[in-house]
Length: 267
Image 1 (cartoon, rainbow, N blue to C red):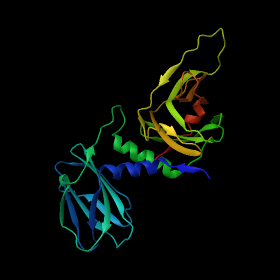
Image 2 (image 1 turned 30 degrees about the horizontal axis):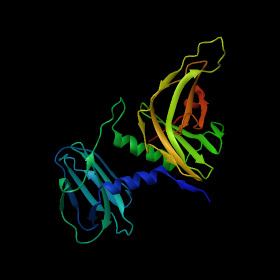
Image 3 (image 1 turned 30 degrees about the vertical axis):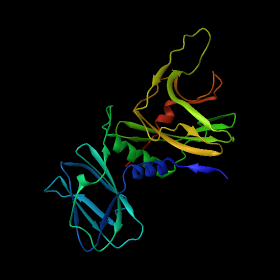
Image 4 (image 1 turned 135 degrees about the vertical axis):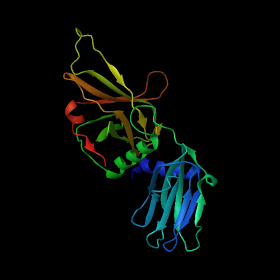
């Protein structure tokens, strides 16, 4: 039976390995997180059981309250003062009125180096892409020597295109990824034509997949600045294997401009 390693699971694991931050909340008391600077971002895992919002009069204060008792823990993510804080929220009756956020573990909230949005927003949007389980494209795929790569979906948010790829290793031997490449190239190639290729560099990659174990499928999301493909050109997506010499398996398939135009909006 194939093991499906969903990238969102990796992301969840990553958050809670660098920090085991836990908060207790109640439906009978309101707690507050005091931050050292203006809160740039706050997101609760389940707003049907948790109220988490920045206090309008005080931009460095977050108000948290359970809407009802709950058993399974949920999450809370906060960004302020260039730090990202991830919490596991659990329900309880004996809760503090005030938490000082600086007493909890955090990591640097790296801002996006391109033109679009901060990395923590890109990560949330990539997780949203994976949660939707879209299969827009049936023919945008290729397979070689037991390795299969396909395009599941293309999504759009502001100036960012989200390409969701699914890679399946049908063999018993692990596939070590050397690179994912995106090329704008000519649709038709002839010996008499000087082919011009331009590499398109993703601005963000969710999980940075490096190895695909045998009999495993992974899903990965790449973020590229919005684009269209000129006439007589295609966007080639290429997966390369890291191996001795030049023996690695390489797979590629192409997209047309009409595929890009099918990008669905993210909320």
